[in-house]
Structures are given as C-alpha cells and as structure tokens.
Length: 493
Image (cartoon, rainbow, N blue to C red; front, side):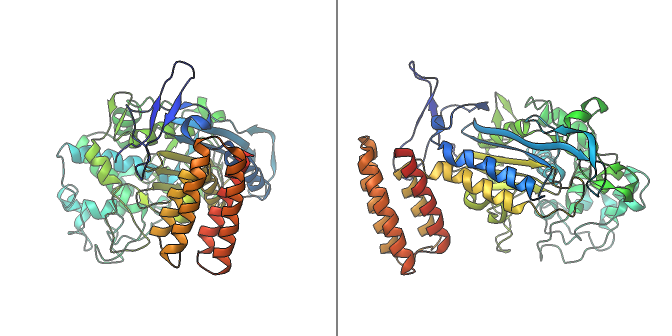
C-alpha cells in the first residue's frame, strides 16, 4: 500500500494539506497519527459530514439501533466523532425502558462481534511473518484432530479466506461445558463443501485460526492480541472480557433468555464466544471507535504506528489483495472483506478493506483516499429482530465519500474517471465531456473566481441532466455526481 496524502505544518496555520496533480492523489510524509482536526485540513467538506447527524438520529427514531458512535478520519485526522442515543436503554425484548438509561458517549466500549476476526487474522499473519507456518500448510499439521471427517487437506489459507467448506456455524454453546470441549466440537465438524470450491463465511474458520495461534504461541488468544497488537498500539480500551468496573462504559446488547443472562451488558453477546469464556477467534473483542481508528491507521501506515511495527509492509499489501478472484462478488483477503458496496457504498474500491459485526458494528478502510469510516451501534439492543443497519452503514459511507469527492473540481474529475473505469457511461465521449467541463472549473477554482465556479458547476449539472435523459450515464453515477456538484456549489456560493 502506498500512502498518498501529505500533511505539512506551516508557520502561520496549525496544518495544511498538499496534493499532487494527476491520478496520484497524495503522498504521505511520515506516518500520520490519529488526532482531531478540521475537515479542510485534509481536503474534506463539512456539509456532508454534518448531514450524518440526521442519518443517525433518524436511524434511532426508526428503530435500527438504540444508539451509535460514528468516527471518520483521513490521513490520521479525525474530522468527525460523535455519539447518538443510548448505550443502554432497555431491560427486556419488549422495549421496557430502564429507570436510568445510559447515554451514548464517544468513548463507549462496544462488543465488536465479528470485527474480532480481523484481529485474529492479524495475529496469525504476525506468526506467518515469523516463519511459524506457511499459508498452504494443512491445518492438521498443527492440530492433528482437525483432520477427522474429511478435513485433512484444509489449509490455513482456506480458513482465512472462508473457502474451507465449513458450515456457517454450529450451536456448540448448547452442549460444550468447557473451552476445550468447544474446540473439539469445531474440529470434529464435517465440511459442507470440498475445500477451495466454495466461498462460505464461517465462524468456525476463525475459531480454528485462533486455535492455531494458541498452539504455536503458547498463549491464549486474548493474551496474544493484547501483548502483540493492542498494547503496543496503545489501544487501552480494547480487550476481551471487560472488567465489571467498565460496565457503565460499555454498550448493552441483547436480552437473551436462551442463555439465562437477561440483558447482556459488559460481556460478549455471541453465545458461542460466551461458551468459550469470552475469548474466541470469531467474536469477543470489545473496543472504542478511537481505538479502532488507531488500528486502521496502522494498516494505512503500512503496518506501523508511532514507531511500533505490528506488521511488515509486504504483509499489509497481502492483506489488501483479493485471494479468491474465482468467487466474484465475494472478494476477500487473508483478513478483510474487500470492495463490498453493500456496506462500503461510495468508499468501495478494489482495495477498500472492511468488516462488519452482528451487534451492529462496521469498519471501512479506503487506502486510496486514506480514509477510515467506523460505525459502532448496539443494533441488537434489546433484540436481534431489529432491522439491519446496512442502510445506515451505506448512507454514512456515501456521505463520507462525498466529503472527499466534492472538495474540488479536481476530485470530481477523479470520480468521473472511477465511474468510467466501472463502465458507468455508455460511451467514452460522455465521460470526456464531463472531465473537460470540470477541468475548466478547476481553473476558476485556482483563481478563486467563485461566481464563475458556481455558474459553470450549474452548467455541469445541466450536462449531467442531459446525459441521464439520454441514458449516457448510469443512475448511480448520475446521482452521486449530481449530489457532489450541489455540495461544491454550496461551498463556493
């Protein structure tokens, strides 16, 4: 991964941003550190970011979640970090309100659910860097009992890319009395598909990866992740099994009569992770938006943060590369989901990494834009029957992307290029005419001629309308460019 954004400190201002011309968007000087700053410092518009507040408030009103925290950062600069609604509000699945509901805070600690998988994969890749295993080694070389029921040929790479053939999950929490019993039930589970022939997202894959980590390192997963990832990064609010003293800072999740736990609050929501003493490769990690931003910035910094090397740059590059192109639509690296517009929306690209969690969490990292978008919600509070948060995830990603794309005519030109590469125009001339128009507007921007910028952007909108009316441009590209054009007009008006 190549960092492309450069921030330089000038004598007369706190910070400023310097972009290079052409398709290379920016080049980073040094390794950015996560800290708050104005959107303009990293060439982002304020208006689309402000509109995220309404999205969140409406999502709470419509019952998507009880509360949420949203954070977005570019080149290490946190341009928005806000809390909404309640961290804990209900005492049962009938939405009976607590006597003293707990309001959401920006430092609320969330059950990350399946985002845990990314940390498990990162731990595994550290051991891979050390030569402790090869990706195409059979799992059974490290866990002999895993070979039963036709799994002798399953490789570590297939676990990490969800192509092992495992079923999505098994409810071992109902029968396993110890963590070791849970592992043995996973190891004895038969495959549903031949290894390597099918993409099937499965918790059992990452539970098994955790077992390999523990076998090689001699440490339980929580100890390993703390010692080798979160502690070096200073992620002090990231942990498995938060202590009772932090309960009031954690977001409550589901009312679970099936586990006889009532409202799950301060301990892991996932039943199988709960059965594994709260420490599992697929779920169990808790964290804050701020801590996740630090982890994401480490990825954007090619594996290093404030002098702490967590991964080698070559490993980070591997982790943003699609390992399974034979399964279109299911792009996946050795750690991350890639290019999934169903929740990444306009931040999606071939190298955009991300993951979601069942509790209502998600993280998106776009290396080209050096941008991170983190949405943490307690969508399962008090019940998992609430509507999916995917529409909220998409909308906040779209507005985050708009804050970047609508910054200038130059950035909009790059957006047109992206749409052209995705065949969103019926012919090359349609894209070229938009680019010519934007190049002229860029000239006026450089000279601070606001009236001319507004006038010609309005002309750009007319051209968009013409192209859409004649079906020269897709509806998606039209809507995005139209929205961004309006943002840019608002900036200069």
